[in-house]
Structure formats: structure tokens, C-alpha cells
Length: 152
Image 1 (cartoon, helix red, strand yellow):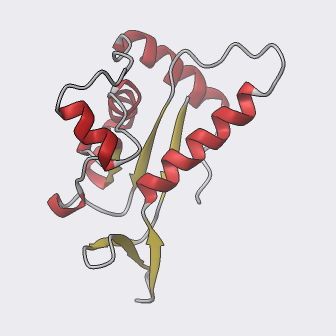
Image 2 (image 1 turned 45 degrees about the vertical axis):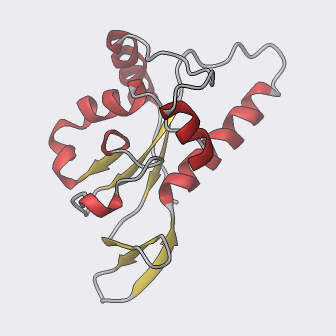
């Protein structure tokens, strides 16, 4: 299961407020917040709802990513919770399945900077190793065949 937060328009990152800004074709700008935080929150909410279903075995594989189909990733967008591997931009659309594979098998970033630094320093924070890529391809292919992506 891969939760995608999709944002359209010309995107830029405002470092003064740590938010992304989207500009539509009319030139109007919108503060769209932090799509990486939104994707993590939505993934967590979806997993909680799914776990509440009696008998649900849980996804073998889950993650989140951000799709910015009208933009090209800029270096200042990258942060501990926003690695390049979790961004699908205009340049990735030609190899969308491969990029979805990367996003799903990439070790997901920690929720907070504190937990990030504990991982970097080698604390005992447990992280599941990335599953095999073939399994991800199969899951992505079957998911793409029977679902749609909604824009949020």
C-alpha cells in the first residue's frame, strides 16, 4: 500500500515558513503546507482504520510518497522527512512504475527530527528492512490495475 499525496501547479518551497507553495495557471499562489507530513499523517490514519477491521491481516508492505507532476525536484526541498526517493516529479513520469517501486521499497523516514537523529546515531530504534523489489512490483502492478489516485 502506497499513500500518495498529489500536489499540482508550479511548486516552490518557502524556507522561511517551511511550507510548499503552489502557483496555478492564473498566477494565484496557495500555501499547501508540507505534503510529506500530510502523506505520513494520511498513511497513519488509513492504517489505523484498516487495523480496526476484524480479521484484517495488514499490508505486507506500506509507505508514502509525494507526487508533484508539474514540478521538478529542487535541492532545498530535501529534508530528513523528504528524501528524493519519496518524491515523484515531472521527470519521473516517464518511468512511473519504477519510481513507485523505489518509493514503496525505500526505508520510510522517521516521523520527527528527534527520531531521525536517534537513527543516525545508531540507537536501538527498530526499522524494518526494505522488502524485496520483486514483491513491490507485483503489489504495485495489482494495485494500479484496480485503484485510482485522488488529489488532496
